[in-house]
Amino acid sequence: MLERNFVKTIENSLKDNWEQPCFSDFEADPHSYRDIAESMLIFHEVFRKCGIKKGDKLAVCGKNSVNWVKCYLATVTYGAVIVPILPDFHGDDITNIINHSESKIFFADEAIWKKLNVKDLPALEVGGNLDDFHVFMTKGSINDGVIAEARGVITERYKDGLKKEDVIFDEIPNGELAGILYTSGTTGFSKGVMLSHNSLMANVDYAQKSIPVKAKDTIVNFLPLAHCFGAAFDFLFPFATGCHITFLPRLTPQLILKAMDDIKPRLILSVPLLIEKIYFKQLKPILSKGYAQIPGIKQLLEKIIAGKLNKTFGGNFISIVIGAAAFNPEVEAFLTKIKFRFTVGYGMTECGPLISYMPWNVYKSGSAGKLIFHLEAKLDNPDPETGQGELCVKGENVMLGYYKNDEATKETIDAEGWLHTGDMVTLDEDQVVTIKGRCKNMLLGSGGQNIYPEEIEARLNNHDIVSDALVIDRDGKVTAILYPDPDFAKAANLTADGIKEEIEKAVRAVDRELPLYSKIINFEIREEEFEKTPTSKIKRFLYK
Image 1: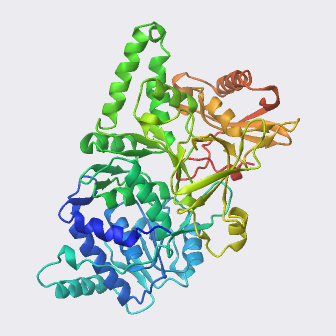
Image 2 (image 1 turned 90 degrees about the vertical axis):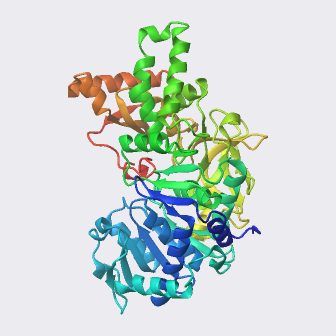
Image 3 (image 1 turned 30 degrees about the horizontal axis):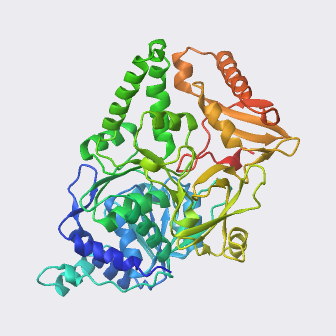
């Protein structure tokens, strides 16, 4: 258990950065750390009036916003348990999560409330609108006046105005449950990952000691806050450091790039999809031109592209940290070649999330970074020839288990406390992790050889005609399911037959690069996009 207390870390940041800008909704006035402290104290009074006790569950669901993080911070510093829900979830899934977690209060955007039927939420006591905090539903005497009453209590208590020394939260032990995160995952029904205060503290502590962000630095948040990658490194870490964090209301490329230009963030977190789209849609067509292959011109072009990419992301960033899904090797190789400031991290919700990371200037290409110092690792059943085995970790940021699911917990954390990640990796002498694929996704060749679908998919995705690829075992045969790129097909005036012909060319080109045992036997063409998780991973279980 870490000595450094998570709630006290929040308290200290509020005090240390009292008058500095803390949170902003994009193109709106900032809230100072003092403003956020006052809001948290008001929420604590609201919780008391609602009869909320330490350990009770409070759920929040909606777009990234200042109001969202107010709910989060107020909940964990009160000693209650936050249940963040991804707004992309279907209404039935949201209902199931609220009920399964036994949440007593639920804050959500109005659009989310429209997905739900209050009659299906028997344990819920109070529902609040995340847009303006009015009480949307109640089963007791609580009404819209509760916020005003709570504000009145705080005003009366601190008649001369709230001062930093007035902010003193109960010291919640790090071993206590802080949040339950229901991952959409890629294996079917969501499980509630129980993260302790210690897990959150370990992630924040590692980031502060490894990433040179400082107080007053600017951050743009566009990853979903209900996903632990965005929560830990776009919110909790920079908040604990004293940064000014701006939340984007919607995720369009135009808005993201405008925010980068306006705010010039110091650190950027991204899923691979955003970077890959820029490369395949904007950069690769230029690099494929005949003149781009001429020595001298090629180097000049790469230098110009590096400068433009740097400017695209505001020009002020330490690095772009890419995570939450596999990164396309072709894109990674190009960015490495032009010395673009990026790195690739690796983690999972069950570790809240970080497992490995390296700063961009020492990042080992093709890897997922170096094991973080709050964890130890081993490989389960490594292959003596390839050195590949399932990565197992234990340490400060490993989850407490799955909520109300002992069976799933025992399947993931063994009797010795090792969390089995389900990822096949190699681990070198410097503890650098290189991911080969998911154990559950791994296919077996006819001679018992291991086939990693992700490696084949990455090659297929390098072809212009392919928007997304999924490789599965169908009746003992390696089968590729492909969704054609509609923009490419339209620009090339391709008919259905033309699309099929281009897809087949791509498949056969990839086949020539593969060993015999992993060649693609069949392929299928989809007319609709794959259904994906919020971090842009295809939900594999739907297509097997």
